[in-house]
Structure formats: structure tokens, C-alpha cells
Image (cartoon, rainbow, N blue to C red; front, side):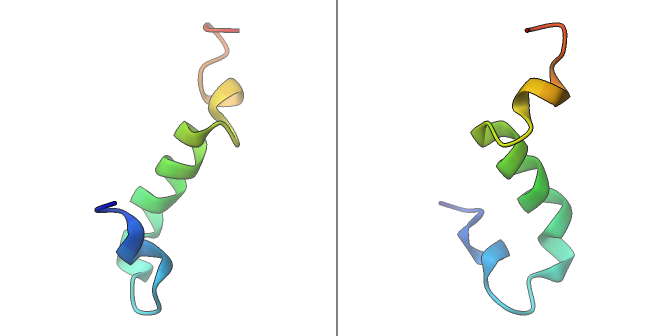
Length: 37
């Protein structure tokens, strides 16, 4: 859960990593990997 700190206030610097994590979770994984679809 090294990405958990991204959810905490002041972790705006990690917004990029956090967004990438969300996409990997499946929220946008399909869109990020259209070749996988």
C-alpha cells in the first residue's frame, strides 16, 4: 500500500502515480490497454 499516501492531503505530488494506480485497478485499465481488450 505504498500508494495509500497519495490519498492523503498533501499528496498532490503523487496524483500522477495515484491516477495510474486507479487505472490499473480497472477503472480505466480497459481504456489504457485497448490492445488487451
